[in-house]
Length: 350
Image (cartoon, rainbow, N blue to C red):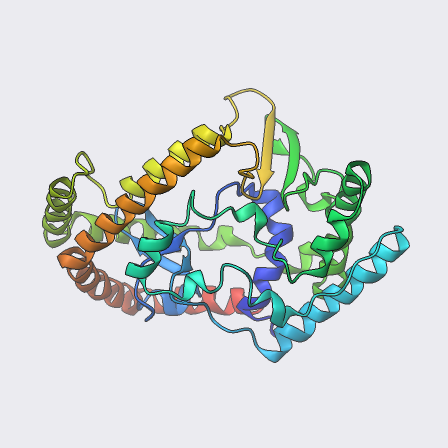
């Protein structure tokens, strides 16, 4: 039986421990229709000038899970309840339908311009470490009623010994990165996912056999970025941003990256030094200890920048880029159809 791409999102809890994703999800302002290449690369695949291809959470909503997906997620919750009970803690199974209506789902159903007006890029304006802490989740209340020491024990039981209480897991490792990531203890939640979806080894995809395809996709992105129509549109976008009071941006991903860097400075989220021991935090950092005045100022700056960015892109860049992108991707798909079908089939069966 095939495992859907939505189910793979659940499995990503385990994969994140190996990848070390310490940033918030990328909110994309791309249109809801799929590009020719996205039809093969999967949901959330976004082509972005200046930043290459990436996976993103799109403002405008996400694909709804199937009944099979929901059934498996219910089993994960039930298995977590049993495991936590054995560890001496109360945990209430949260219906997956409730998770689908999280505190942020309404935000990502907004049109791109409205999202920018309220949330900017969704970087400093949304505390992603609180994504699972909505008031309707009974486990939030259960944990909050515990003492500080009991909360720490609760987090350890639920998410493993390296849980930091914000839904993130800290992985220590040497120069080669986290050791035995596949054996990383992710607590009752990790055990439940493994129990329902199988061992990580069963889901692993041999991406090496697609190295050639990925290199060709990177080359495709470069061809799109250097197309004279995209170059001219980017220049016009840069001029538009300068006219709006935001000068100095040469690539369309620069404004978002600037905000991310400023937030990293506030939260102290710094990459490990070369040659030193690695410390990977899987999950976004909390804003709890961030200077509130500085965070408020950054949020105002982010929204102003994102609003100008969205307007400047909508004034001509988006249409020009999409026209070049779709034509180039269609040609690419025609030339690499067998490889793309193999990749699609491989990921659809995991």
